[in-house]
Length: 377
Image (cartoon, rainbow, N blue to C red; front, side, top):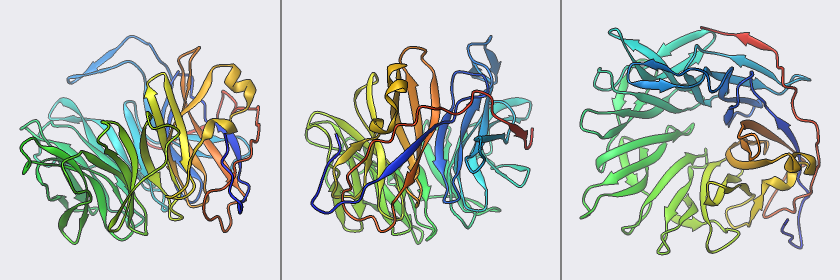
């Protein structure tokens, strides 16, 4: 149900199903301030599996950009099979991973795409260990993680020419986001504890800084240009709680129920947060927090009742841009399809505090056939 305050602004959202290129699965991972969406799309599912290297593939998956400025949402494939996009900056540079041949064998490698060019980022140890590029800022700086021989992962930063390790707390690490102030966020295992604990961290001026005190686990998933970090932390109840670190303050975001776990996936420069709450796989809901002190809003209220009757549920919200538009994944309990979606926001100028949400029913999903350009294969 929507939450009301004495002073509120009405938010309207228009729902758009990004659909697929014929497969059963697509995912929308990020949306930039120009409204372009990056993610993964498929052309077929449940086909005979392919084995490449030590990886088993069931579908032809492509890193994909959706441009919703067209009258019909236009999808553009930017890679060959077995690739996915995780982030995109304002210049159109995409960061993700792709299946790459190395010395006659295949492995997943951190990859960037821009202006028709594909660039593979070398692994930290130069072997067949997989890697992924998680985030790219508007300056073209990329962060991600690379697997090591020691069964650990190592966060890295790449400036377009040079690949470097990021500092650790003694164990594995993973960089998940970087803002335009060149501050990266992610997590690192602190081995100074008797049992290594995963801690939310930032990397700033060449140093690693833990965001949370105590012995509980936490993880950072995004950072905005206000240097505010979003992620999750585990409480004394052993549940995951959506969390925001606003410089020296750690804020637990409000949930629907004390017995519900939650994750904060992304935060925009207006400090709006999106993520999801869950009891289990079959009970997961995409949510929005309009401010770090506001209540969780179930984004499914913007899904037309006819689509809900067909089995669709908005399960995750993976990103939100500064215009308030949200992307994520929707699951159909009847067909077991997963589709990327976008909720386009209206009336967000000057938004402050917790706003009342107004249901806007849009009963027309995106056409099943979308136009496609092959950028680079």
